[in-house]
Length: 249
Image (cartoon, rainbow, N blue to C red):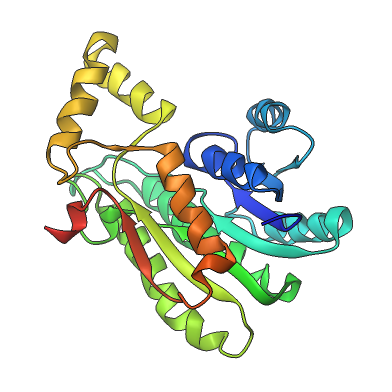
């Protein structure tokens, strides 16, 4: 990855930030994007001079177009795109609102579509796109039908896109984590169950996995780096589950 240029959407925290950290450690130049400039600037400071930021919303095709124009000005090339930005609501059938549906699909499906489509003119032979999916694409928990549906749509996008881009030399793959130990997960658990119950609940979540725990963000980042790098040069169109084996049982 030395001196290659990557865009990571949703790169200011969680999996996206871990991916940016992994790429910078491997010698890449990284542009992280997100809607909250304060979080982006904090991430930029922690990542150092190999990172720069772009404030925008992936659900806006105009913002995404501006992102790639800015990357071209800053770096003159684009080698890797990590479509990581995502969001979801816990809403069981009967309580889903139009706003929740629009927000979920605008970020997780529409946002991914334009993140990839708008990048195509800037990507050359040997470039790689990795889309962050979810085990929810095949096994959504109760109340997560919208999120699971949007992630399933992304997987189907890729089945078609590898045919649409045939001959370009651009690879597109999906990396689907299970539960990951992020600050946002811990915050959500603290709100729902109390701060003193967070670790116990995280431990409980890992019990259902054959590996016996949930993932760390660094583990997901290393899997993304594999799919983004030349080490996976003949891997194209897959959905790789990084979930400790949960999707296999």
